[in-house]
Length: 212
Image (tube, rainbow, N blue to C red; front, side):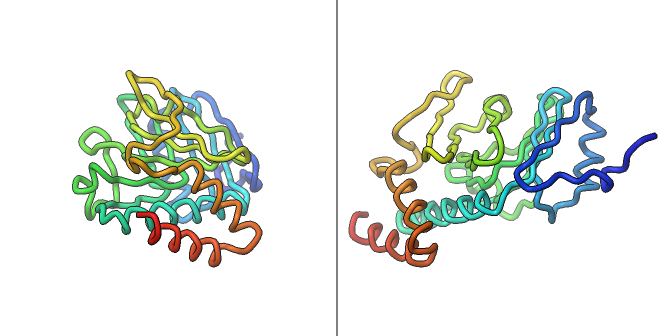
């Protein structure tokens, strides 16, 4: 007896791993899941993981994304934020949904696009994973060629830069030269947990005005 996808329940903070999933099956699953959903997918060489993040995962994603937007606006850098867009390549047998992502250098290439086709479109310049509930798959991002991957865990922010096909951990972000990104993200995400998101964001805007 075959199970329908709608019969399967994945609780927040949990993952489900499926093997021997063909590309067409992946496409069918994505269509059935729909775009307005809480789950995230990761697909690599016929293995499919479906994850449902916890509420704290979403809070961290939102505040880090907002910190980035504030910085880019203050620096007058054009960008496109594509949230949890599905990035996939059939030829590479890879698909991934970042928690949030940004096109910065390649911003002009995706203006007005709701679907990204990595056979013709560039990957995002910056992808961000909140790794509290799931284990970030570096392989997907490496193969798809995402140049900068941020991973936020309970230990804080980690910046990974793609160099010669592999991620190398870095203390600096090429997208924000001269800015202590790790220190700032860690400080204001932590601050949001004690004084609330609104106060933390206002404090960050004050720092930006005084220092940039």
